[in-house]
Length: 26
Image (cartoon, rainbow, N blue to C red; front, side, top):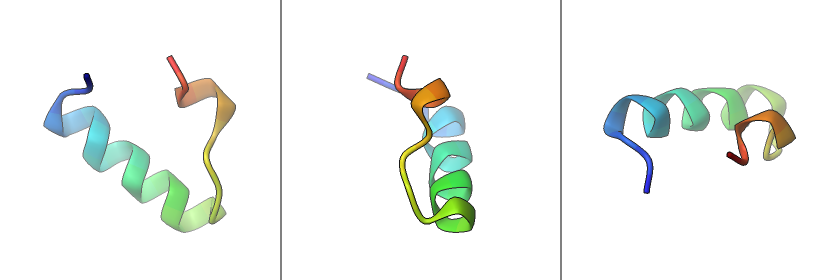
């Protein structure tokens, strides 16, 4: 489970790259 902060950060990245970053798959 990710914290709201990580979730928001990932959503921001995924929206920018339009894909799921492997580095954030932790």
